[in-house]
Length: 282
Ligand SMILES: [Fe+2]
Ligand SMILES: [Fe+2]
Image (cartoon, rainbow, N blue to C red; front, side, top):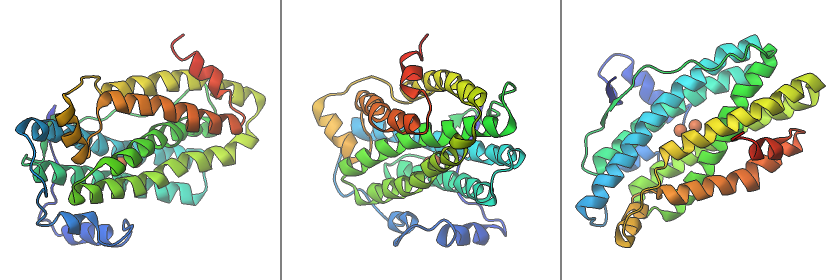
């Protein structure tokens, strides 16, 4: 455990970091960093809503920061799998996006009156190396988990949160996160689209079996990140204005996205996703 901080330092690399944000990682104008500079909340909120929102944005900061390590670890797997160069470059960009997301979430914590720090486990987990699989199949499993599952679901949640958020500075952050997660999800769907037609029957059968494990893991992760605790109606409305959907609603949207988006798309690529979803708890 340690203290996670995501502020930019004062080293000679600072200007390069800022240049990356302005150029390579830019999505639109103005940048959320510019919107946040000197921003204040436009409405007033109860102490309770502010405290809950700070907790939610702090948890997001930790989660986004960890995601950077996931993308960084995809690179050696994609190298081993002989993936085309654009996959290798863009996963590094995605790692940078996630570090930026962590910093943006930290800025929202500050906007809400908190300190952008979190006590968290700073060590990150290695990605599974799937010893029963060929290198391209192993890369496919991890890219599929990250892009087609995690990021595709995150995208649906962010789209909903963007609709609910009432604070312009928070909306700018949610909009940036959403725009970046579109690319992160596309990583999964593009790689799957390329590899699925090439899989042997054995590789496909092993991928189908892996899906059960992946779905169970994803559901555990999503539910852990979205506690089912409820709040009174006025607090719920305040939280939504601050970019935080309730856990119960997030869980429902997760199930809906799996059913309406993820499973049919995986099925379109020839994977037995519906069956794997039904058997995820077996
Ligand atoms: Fe992110
Ligand atoms: Fe992402």
